[in-house]
Figure 1: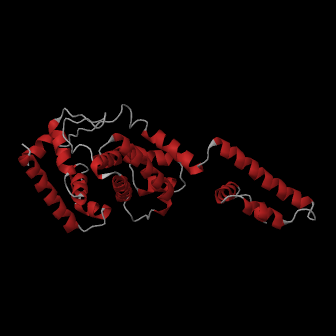
Figure 2 (figure 1 turned 30 degrees about the vertical axis):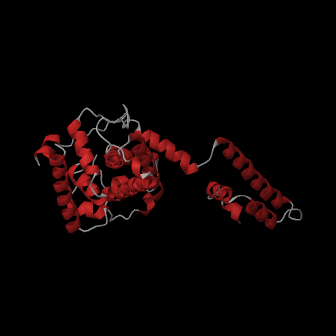
Length: 175
Length: 99
């Protein structure tokens, strides 16, 4: 079965659990990882994921048929993750305090390179973090990213270029 | 760029075993609770209140001298906003209530 606006959205409009389940099955994992890369801890990601799906459940009726379902879901997920980060104290940003500090049972600190990449991403300004993650991990095109972040394609491209440059510098500086 | 190529999409993050398998069920269950948004005791209290409103409405239909529609309105308005929305939601298809 292929997923498109019609076979997902028409039943979802009636908030049928079955259709909602299809939506979660299709997008749940990708949205979780998008959120996790931003909030870092599994427990925080789990809370944000819950909030995201509550919002989706409540507002699916308001989704415009012309709007991209993926972009709409990622926008909600991004906004919720950012809201969660705003509520956290500034010194609570995990992973930036060193690779030998265990902040979460669900982080594998043995993979030093992967930890370092995440640390590098977390040092970026939020907009660059988002653009980098959506492009690098979710392999989204610039138009889609611009739609999610309410930005322009040119700005998204510039942010991606800057993010990559800073990440490479981070690796060089912390060799 | 070599570092990025070498690491690829590898991440240090993990999830509890079976997390994604149970994700949809967990979310649907939580959403259902939130959609109805009431604890069991509160549901019982609301059910009782709903029955009371229905009884008053029925009684009014038989004895218009003793209970007026404004009594029902007053009783309804005396309930909390949440309770009123719940009742309206519950009986939204019962048109006779609004006649």
